[in-house]
Length: 183
Image 1 (cartoon, helix red, strand yellow):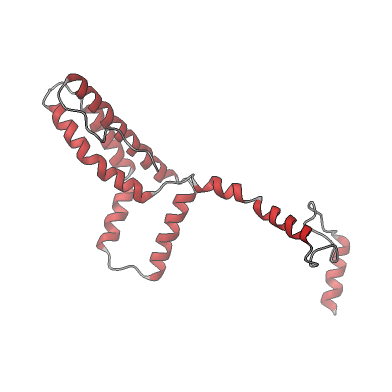
Image 2 (image 1 turned 30 degrees about the vertical axis):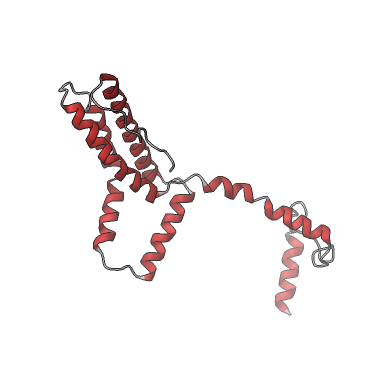
């Protein structure tokens, strides 16, 4: 009984605050199962749905990022080789963008290589990896976002060089011209 007396004394000194119907005294429809209370609970639960939907598109899909990088490499080789034959330096922006991409995405490449070289992961390592993937999808993470931006800039520089080369008549237009920014 001394615990109950202590709790009563604390609640007498520190009155609980109310928050628009969240703190109701017992007996005011909290457990009676009325339709109105179920509707109110449903509405309260749905209040957080837009927040979750907004967060779902904020992060970056790392697998997409690696696939996009792999897709861009042959395109870059094709257009830079054609541009080098002109011997006027118009391929330099692509090389600069590639260097920036390699620097920004170094951590991602190192992690991928490390993962490929290691033995099969333990349950804990796999759990942490999967959880990290989910977090990166939901929340923007600085290094991953910088990597994504640099991959997009690399793709844009490739597309720009390809347009110049098509205008000059050096190459024919590729059917897959232009980066696809779906991260």
